[in-house]
Image 1 (tube, rainbow, N blue to C red):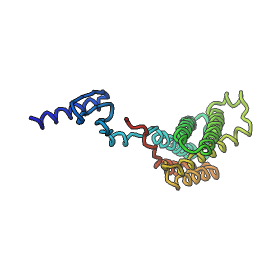
Image 2 (cartoon, one colour):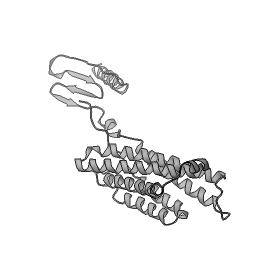
Image 3 (spheres, rainbow, N blue to C red):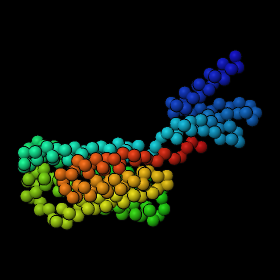
Image 4 (tube, rainbow, N blue to C red):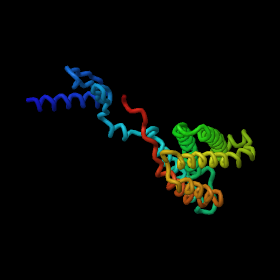
Length: 242
């Protein structure tokens, strides 16, 4: 009977914890237990009952899906661009052009979200690293806006005619975008704990270089970017129950 009662007690307590409820069960003497959200406290000793579950949670769990999706959109744009040019010219009114540039624009937006997420994760570092992350994020987002400006001009002839694209935006936008993202990835690869392996930013850089050398290498460059971002690992969520 005593064992059965203990089993029922523990099962009920675990159920209430998993359900997000708090309960206090008091007994006499120093064996008194207090149950609370995510853990159990015995007089003079604190114990966390769901360490495994808490350790399994990560801060910013959307970082990896965002990075992978953005890279895949870039890859899809590269493939559609090659498909559009198979007949020797690219039709700016064709479905491949429009779909490819739309996917490219969505990818740039997601890369912007990725940079914001990386900056938030890197806020736990030293003041110097935080400042560098802030500057890189601002540069990357400004570059993303410039990238978006150029893409909108490619998608909509009326936009390109109404708003002349300065050379500073045309060339400076992609450069700021790439420098900002690469700086954040380098900080993530050198953070403690490390969010990326050391070789990951190198692969992303190689992908950007391939794209800059020849746009026909865009699928290869996008694949390198994908390979570099795939192992991104968000940090474990801090702040266990006390």
